[in-house]
Image (cartoon, rainbow, N blue to C red; front, top):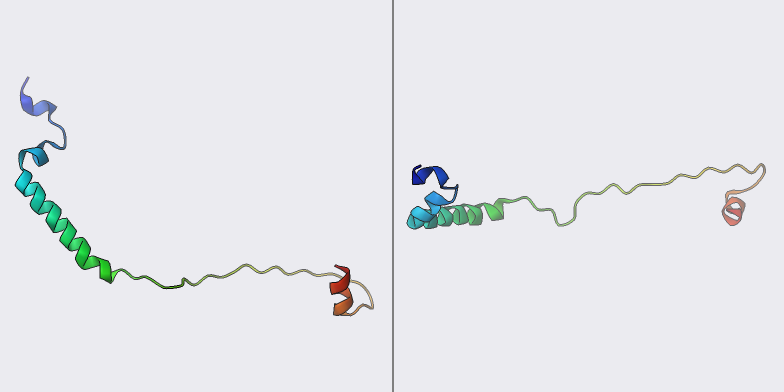
Length: 69
């Protein structure tokens, strides 16, 4: 069997460390350039849920309902 069959995905990166370093530096540079372009909102728009309660008490005012509930 030849040596090349058992080499994993990391073999070219180990075999060519200068190319690996240049590729890493390129990815880092692209990330640093793109970072300020990311859209970030200080406070996201949030719709808070609301609850609606209905109660029926014939002849009562809203204040009476609030006191009894």
